[in-house]
Image (cartoon, rainbow, N blue to C red; front, side, top):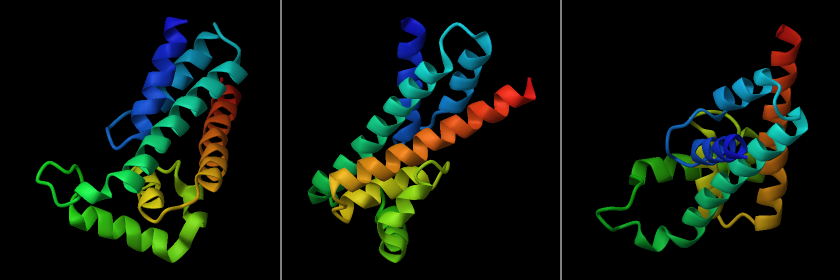
Length: 142
């Protein structure tokens, strides 16, 4: 149970704007063969989507504090995310799994007031899909 909690936490942190590598933790756990793969992918996906939901909520509800000196994002970061999201709309959330750009996209989705139901649907499919493909490739390699 502790290992699954660690996987959840790693996936959660990796989806926020903090640095993290959930893929390494997931693959290590898959290779140990101590838990069913479906459970590992489900736990990692849940943690990663919940982390993205934090970004969405920050964008949705915390932008009123954007002028504060301790606000965690620069105006330039917000402008870039908004421009990307403004150009591609909700379809850009399919790239929410991509390192570096995915996390700011989920923040931009909140800023741009993306409906929660669509946000969760697309982000869940994108992030779970990434983990499934990663596991399939890893298992084929061993």
